[in-house]
Image 1: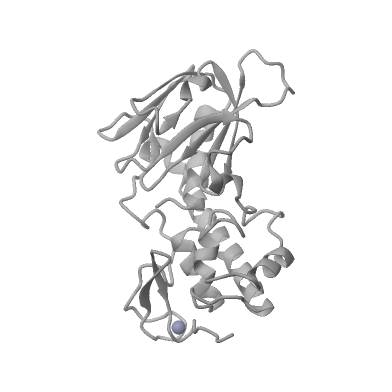
Image 2: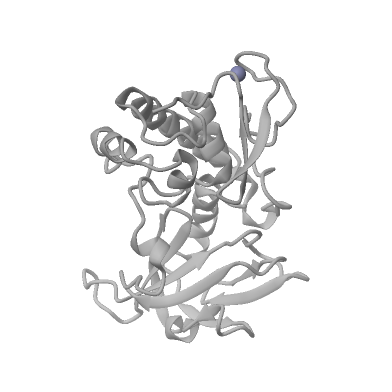
Length: 276
Ligand SMILES: [Zn+2]
């Protein structure tokens, strides 16, 4: 499952191919998954940004004067297996033709989605509409995070809700909680725990974005399709996917539980539930 660092890497890879280009055609055969994409045709891509795990392409009229507000956005969610390629393949779902070339959206498991909306109109996408601050931006403030964390339910599902902070998915939630030595089911963090978790999220997400960025030289054509969760970058994981292996901090075998319907990895020694 692509998480924030993978989506950010995708953004950086497709930006040089799309920025400033005019979208001539977006073809697919699933209008319920790729909604209103015809509205993007004839528009110029004036920016590529990201919120959490959503890619946002800002679209302006190709004839519009500079400085006018962007009027539409093409929102892309990669789902479980979505990615862009230069060559069409067996799993190509959407083909995007610009005045400079063609980009194919491959998605073997078909969980990816696209939609063209009026800029900022995320009413049909509650997760995007309620999304918290970007973890590596100045908007992600420690004091506010601590305030929210002191009232939180089970901390891992709370992180995965995207409300306290955007873009933290299953892998990086497990890694951040391991680093902060907090049990994934802990509720109502103390201020000290919340501060440790805040620092851990910034460290884990920063390292992952950097690792993704270091592979940018490959070019979009060589963009490696992952198979299922994990396996995108050679990032050293300490918890995720390591059930039964010794904890890198204390040597105790790591455990795997299901929490909020998600596989959850933690150290039973370093990450104990604190009774309230
Ligand atoms: Zn441990």
